[in-house]
Image 1 (cartoon, rainbow, N blue to C red):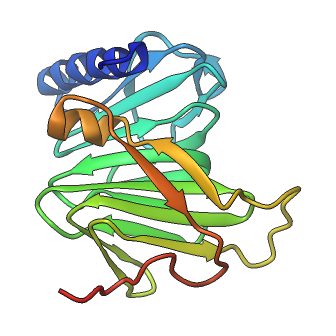
Image 2 (tube, rainbow, N blue to C red):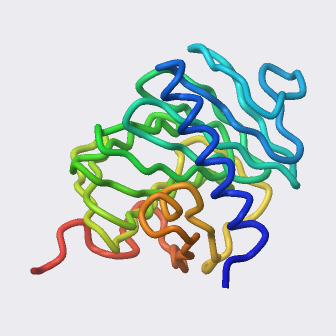
Length: 203
């Protein structure tokens, strides 16, 4: 069943893709409470490097650039920087065919394969990377394959509480592109500084 959230995501992605095709640049499509540089975002807006995107508890945004679509989930904050998105807090989902990257703290996450879908979460002093399709590479040299998860704890960060061991997160943008429906992943990451699943699983 396609839920209202999924339908909203599909509409955002289609409109953003059309707008990007016309402009050739980065286009943000907003739903609910979304701000760009602390100003309420219009339904559709062009982005330039350095723009700060923030979504409220009821908000969501889709950023479309040539070769990639990035979904910014509710209650998240990020900065758009052309070839990468800087995630300050919350969750982003990426679908890319050209290696689009997300930077969370000092950790850079980049797609390696032609079709890559992955999610980056930065919450409670932990950065979690979930790969739904293809492979990604972390700036520390680690390669994560489809179906695997890696978690890093941010050094020197003080969190008010621990991240739950299990959380269900909507992949959103990438899932809509690949299959027409939002899919969900159960993220199990009780570990600190090690993998919830191996970065190089046996074939």
